[in-house]
Length: 187
Image 1: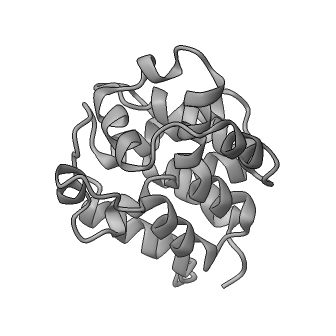
Image 2: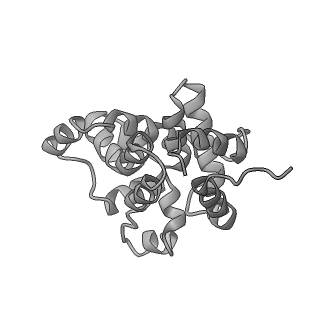
């Protein structure tokens, strides 16, 4: 008996992680390790499945970009959050795609709203913050707070900050791909 074909979203995501998941762009972990740590942190906090999927896939745009590491070195914003959200919106609803799209703005927001947040960022996150426009102004922070999915993006951002440690044991990619398959729109 043959198995049914996997959802095209899951196949595309699996392929992307296989081809570019080993990329390291300045943190202690590669893209796969970072994604899995973020997903594990989200699950440990009891996040809904769609938000766990957003946590795992929030940096997929780095892998879609032709040279994300080169962009950062050149001081250019790779706009990975937009690339990733556009890619994901083909198969997932806004509960997955929007926290991905907003997770960079969530970093900018947290720098404005939480004293000490900027100082706790990794050196690379501080560097990319500059490239991405720096902390929000008060008006930008207020506008961000009114967006649907803004607080979900803040959660993703916090898991993003925590998912950068070498050697952390997590569930494997297939665990999270199965969860993503359950969140994807029918093919």
